[in-house]
Length: 288
Length: 164
Image (cartoon, rainbow over all chains, first blue to last red; front, side, top):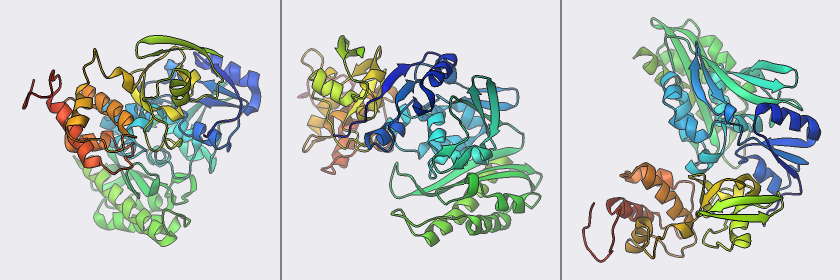
């Protein structure tokens, strides 16, 4: 039987209370929502926090809505809710496509969007999706709040900029006209982590690429981004040739490592091919 | 700490350690052993129960997280001696072999049919994709759920071709 070590349990009703509890328990406290990353780590004793602060009742963090020209996603939104959200799909089909291949329906019923990002697993899907659409993250603390571009959110594997006494509360995704998005993932079996995955968001200006975001996961891309491929594409014709070349550039610049899921050359191949496919589909959608 | 969990419509108050998992609370504290305990790693889904009306893997939920919430387990499917259509479906279509995954499969299937009364085979497969059948009897599980969809309120399984 896998049993976590002892900890104190507190349940918070709102963000203020979460921050107060974080201040009271100090750096060895952890926020728990779905718990589908943290509890398995606690069972294996890879994590042994002194206290868990349960935020499942903090309903003010559970929303998906458009405000002015941004899609706002509260961090307590469950994966299943983002998957089924018409407003998210309308503006960013990448979310539905990424969510569909994250874990399984039971895990998606419980796991949260904010929890996935805070876990900062290097193979996590939404990190690539949020990087592609150039989201930013809102982090609350005792002094107020700060907003961090998603592309600066991850410090390294399992490490983010969310500091002691802070709580990630919201994702903001800028909505710009003329764009669309798509997500492509290859895994070994249903519900598995990605062997490689690519997300693309593209904005067209006539036949050309006005702006583009490319997110990569599981292949060692810095900040989950294929920056060189983005740079190459900007201003070029939005056609198969450009997308194929962008895929080659993305493959060249990522740094996959060999593991039980696959060897380096295969992952690199996938990074390129999935980038190309995601770009192609995002552009098709942007045209219609 | 003291918790009160409404399980299958009944309030249960217990004093538990915060680290107690919901699956063990149900099985060991409440004696509801219909919910099985399998992989312990959120993979196999034999521990699936409903928490506030959605199925979750109870090996990855703390019992204290269920304080003040409602839980539904496989024991609640049968009503007044009458099996739920999904239970009848598994019986009719040989949806279980060793039976270890069955409670979880039943809870997910019931939820699927409550939210999508006429699912395609593909939708059934997706719905149970977080659950493992160690006998690999997936074909019959899909048939069983299909059967339940086609017989949503059967009173007597001996009647053939009953549709409502």
